[in-house]
Image 1: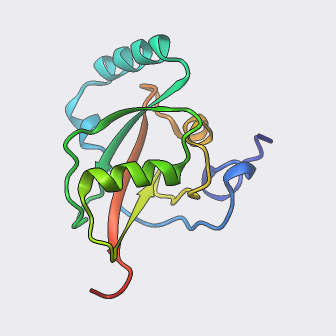
Image 2: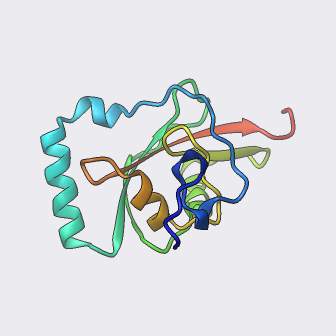
Length: 141
């Protein structure tokens, strides 16, 4: 990874075509759990599983996507955004005509980007990576 920062904060490795979006993102988890508690948990998880990425995945505000049964995920660092999208898509049982999009800090990371690169650029001070998801009907259904 070159470490060169491009538009939206993604490294050159993950800079294939994507668009920053203007969505009001905010994590309910961050609002409901104090920073000290989140940081302690993040440090504990990273110490116990240094080869994994701790992620909080929440539905985007105003999204019609179904809610996930859980928000915290611990995934392998070599997993890509696209692979995570596939896993989450299975958990929310979307119709075939619905696409699933992930956002990190109001940006849409490329599907081929490893989560380790996204984590390095965008993890919060509590050591969690916060991602939101939303659906969009791609066939006008």
